[in-house]
Image (cartoon, rainbow over all chains, first blue to last red; front, side, top):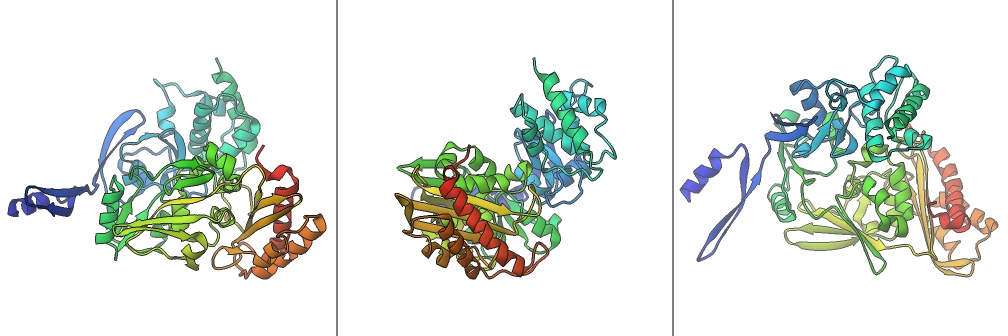
Length: 189
Length: 292
């Protein structure tokens, strides 16, 4: 029994015992993991980070992993500047606890670049001059790329809807939407 | 301090319930996180422990059997929008889910979280009132089924005990003969908190009338409220535009709105009637309000 307690203490930073069940022939101990080391796949690379588990994914990406594509603006899920692709779907990384990203696959705007080449959406943003101050652009590009991963031929309305959670205060939406339409055309085989 | 908060991430319901039972005094449940993370950062919530139930298996499902729809509490709005069961049997809920936040939020926010957060402006709640949903809760000591109207007991207050979590929500799905619609008034189309939202479900069709009418109003009282006087004016009546108008006028009596940054009480009281009129009209006359 004593050794069990010691064992529990040694592992305390990652596991906590949550209950014992003892009968005449056997005993069992239920453990639960308390996360401090968090692992996920970031832009195709397996990544493990030691961080406070109640920090947001965005804080860890920017401050600990120096991945600064996603930006923090509103920190409330209203502006979309922190958008990342998590398991294939766009999410606000400011509204995801880093513990909730365990074992997931995360793609940021940096991860959309393949072998030093920008993806079709990134190219189209440059071609169309869709960037003014640039602050919202990584989020826009991630949202648009997530849409094009799921839908090859989105309508204009679908593009607008997919980008409706991304705010641009330079009000450059027209060129942004034109760039996404163009990228969709170029991506078609 | 957020850096000192401990996060438990159980992977089974049993583990989650055991943890909840042991730490019930000072633990908060996190599902999708979209409400609670903001509240933690604002300092509106102080806690030392979080129970991250997102990895819990078997809480994310949408099923339909013999007309009854069951939705696991960890189902996201995106799941609800994409599921054929909800699209077919709960289009009023789908319509609400589509208008919540934007794509990013719909991919993380869960229906169980919306119930647990208990905001009077929670957009999935009026459709669930109109559908007459049951909330199924679990704790180590058992399972409870609570009608949604008794689940919410006051402003941001639920009937949930501190050792309980929401397991699923279930309701009798709408059928081809039923009518239903959901309408939301926000300051813009995406990422807007409702000024007023309305869900209606009319069942038991006989010629041009319905024997079961539920009209639920959001963001006009401390909790979601049913517009009982409006419902009574519709039940069993032959629905004409005139009758709809008269009934919709009554809905403002069922509301007790307040003034806040999104709108004044008077405005809400006025607009709730016209929104009810439009919703019932859409449900009954415009191809049963069903999605394209």
